[in-house]
Image (cartoon, rainbow, N blue to C red; front, side, top):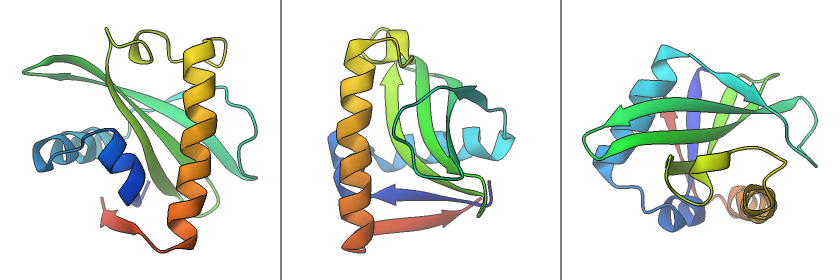
Length: 120
């Protein structure tokens, strides 16, 4: 990915601090992505997850990757012990519901231009 987009609403819901943002960017720069299945995704996109270890424990990052433009859209930054983070899979009801809500928020914020682009 050449850049990551952080939308205002999702960053707020995920409680992303500057420290966490730098952890997310560092993980994205390593470009070790694990594809995961998703439903109702935009054309030419895929969900990917990244694993990171922080001082506060293991975390999971989920990004919507626009493969055509090579842009990532930040969605989740969760502890592996969190209700969503422990089972990041479309088979998980909690993840599936949250993903649907976050995709709607992503569309809304991008239309309103309420986002920040960060180059990798």
